[in-house]
Each structure stands twice: as structure tokens, then as C-alpha cells.
Length: 330
Image (cartoon, rainbow, N blue to C red):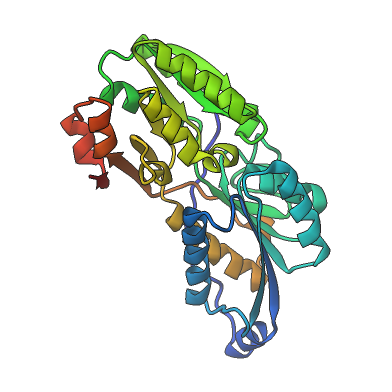
């Protein structure tokens, strides 16, 4: 699907008289947050810490002029819906949401409370905003993965796996943008250009994950692309373990996978996105409307390689990947 992209700088907040700014900061504001994964997830803790640091840089701190209500969806769409209802009932001044399922759950509960989303790939297709340039409602935020990324992941997989014959893109239709269709077209197009068989592998359960990974392991020349949706992210250590057991090389959309033992990843830098989200939260708390703030695309990307995993898979990492990797895990 062709989309017109729009990139706009965050810009500086509008200059306000000192008295007005002081009044804004003096009133305790209530901020709701729903994180996509669990409270014990190290990456989620790091993302939230980056967001809180960004808020502090804008002059907001817990207990002084801000009250934060933080919830954790633990990669469960049903839990996300329950938490959205609970948080909206508290009537916060603004809500930060992470992931497509969480944002969808919040949108069902309120069309008035401002929402800043992160880790969303297709906000127009999912009906969160009217357009990237003019959101038009109570939501705005930051895109982490554009559809073309699926082709990039497959290119990287073919680069690191000589003789790649078939590749599966694994996703959960309940948590992936467009129920997975968002990424399929560029993935399949790239597969044709590389003369690689493409396999769409929707999974709804752990049993289905085991089935597709086992199937790939039985066929020589197979590999996988793992989408960074909340269902798969919550199971990343299990996925990495199964792929290693069946000797299936994979490319991921997030460096949290390579740090947990995955082979290779490429994606938006999430810490950067959460810091930028804090600036949008600041602007809205000072009076800006979400409909006036364009949806932002990712501007900082990172490639991460786990050299130990490559060695275990018997892969020789090409110099082209070593030179581009910002992180090499030995």
C-alpha cells in the first residue's frame, strides 16, 4: 500500500509569558501510561525510563507537578482492553500508549482524552488518525516501522544466510498492523526479486509458533523474519530458544531480540522514540491539541548483530553487515 509520508520536526514549544508557564507547571497534571509488555520486561523498563527522563528535561516530575498512573499490558490484548477502561475512568489529562493493540483499546474508550502513541506502524490504516500530517482527532504519536521494513529485513536475511531458499514472516494477526497485511506486500515483492519462497506465517498461540518453527527447521535453506508485535515480543526468549534448537536463522525488528540471543535485528531506536514522545506530551499539557501535531516517523535506526549466535549457526558474517552494525554482541 502506498502512503504519503510526512516528516516534521518537533520544533520548540510556543513561547509563553513566564507567569503563564508558572501556572501551568504549578497545577498537578495526571498522566496515564499503558506499556505493551510486562513490568518485569527489561526493555519496557528502559523505554519508560527514557520517557520519564524526557519529561524531566521538559520540566515535569512525579509528585511535583505530575501524577503518573502506569499500567502494563503484558502482551495480552484482552488485558490491554481492561486496562484502557480502567485508566480512562481515572480521567487523566493525557495518556501515553505503546503498541497497536493498546492504542486501539484506548481509542475505543475515549475520543476526548489526548493520546500520544508509540510503537505503532500504520496509524492511518488502523484508523487512529485521518492522516499523518493532520491527525484530526485526539490521537497523535510516533511510527516505529513502515511497511517497507519487511523487505529490508528479508534482504538482510538473504545477505547473512547464503543459499536462502525460503523465508517465513511470523506475526500475530491480533496484534500486527492490518492483521499482518501491512507488511506482506513488500515482503513478498522482495522475496520474488531475491528468488526466495515467501511464507506468511500467522500465529495465535504458542502451539502455532512451535509448529511453524519446527517446519522451517526441517527444510534446508529456511529462515524467518520476526515481527516486533506485542504478542511476539512477550515471547521473544522462547522464540529465540526454539529457533536456535531448530537451527533456523532469523532477522528481527528490534535489538531487544539480539541482546537476548537472536541473530540480527534492524529497526527504529525505541529509546529515541520515547524521548521524543515526552516532548509531545509536554506540548499537549501546555495547551497544544493532538490534531495539530503531525504523526512523526522514526528518524534514528539501529542494526544489531549477535556474533555468538552467528557462529553457533555456522554463519560467516559478511563485512557489509559488520560495517553497518552499531552493536556487535560477542
